[in-house]
Image (cartoon, rainbow, N blue to C red):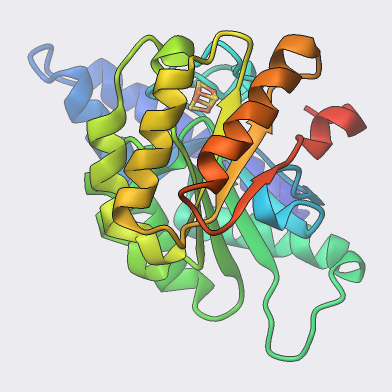
Length: 275
Ligand code: SF4
């Protein structure tokens, strides 16, 4: 039996077990109860693959990507619709099975990493929102990763209680500040709590669309500067047209006046047409 078919068999067995549990589950047991059970044992993963980071200050570096299924937000510019919910493409992995899968993907792509002495291959946890599965991630990293991989956590920055659980095990936190114009929610209080937990390992990303308002952008800059003006701050255009270009250049001046390191960076994977 190959490794891949072993994982598939394990996932099929797990899914069957979960379905059996669901049918046997007392009707008064809520969805939350079932969700928590998932959190501690196996979680839905949309895909695991090798590529180059497409965004932020690590853009262009090789990584293994683990994309979890499920997200607590619905941003209007989201480019990963396939991972917003648990769906037919999701496969449930236990921590051990996911670790072995990551190792396999790394072994197959080792030749692209060119690691310097003392550095480790980087695993980017993304989604969806990976912090929905913080307990699982803690198990995966502490029990299996040990010193083999470095941890890059890509998050929407809205789950402060979750990042507290695994902050110590992350090497880099790539945190979005989400605007009400894109997500229909004011998330600034959650962002503030979140950033206070992980300010020393975090860089911020703001996605600028035609709808982004100056006022909300200024609020994001002030929130960041109020915690530390050393936090790196990325302005990421959602596309290229006159309206967005104008906003991006104007916003750069606003941010650079208050923060030490501000950059305008596009998404490489969109240029490469990888989604
Ligand atoms: S937080 Fe990320 S994955 Fe979730 S909807 Fe927004 S862009 Fe999409």
